[in-house]
Length: 113
Length: 110
Image (cartoon, rainbow over all chains, first blue to last red; front, side, top):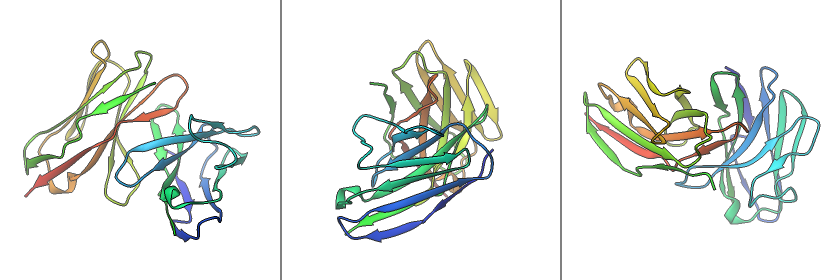
């Protein structure tokens, strides 16, 4: 299965600022996703990152708040914009492995102060 | 709204016992079913996938799927303290998006 490198692993940010999270995959993958895991909660899908086109966002998530780039089949970024303490979460990228399942990056633990 | 329901637990079993984790899902069009293990502070790790009705065994783990009942389960035999974690049930349909349950916290007591 694909191996994902995600960074940063953690960050503490001031409210009102933005943070960009990067995911690099060791092979070309078609399907790439971004999830949020709030403290003590399960994973919620933010968006599907599409190569060469705009990301597809789930209900409750908007591009202005969570802009996503997918310049090629091995790389994607998620930006958390104009952060507030409510954005404090773990953010994870994931890829679909044909016939195997989904692999997750190691996660970015974000704290907004 | 697609939903995946799990017993929230916590579930506590003695070392060497069988741990049984259950999950139901609402979308009859679901095609792929996964169990992930998540240790505290870590990202989810895939432990089992199942795509057709019946049982699938991998070492100490057995996944069971019943599409008619919209039910999937995970059995862990000979439970070890290292199995203590949150177990997440996840379901996907033709759009490849994963929907997760809230997870069941399993504690295996030595």
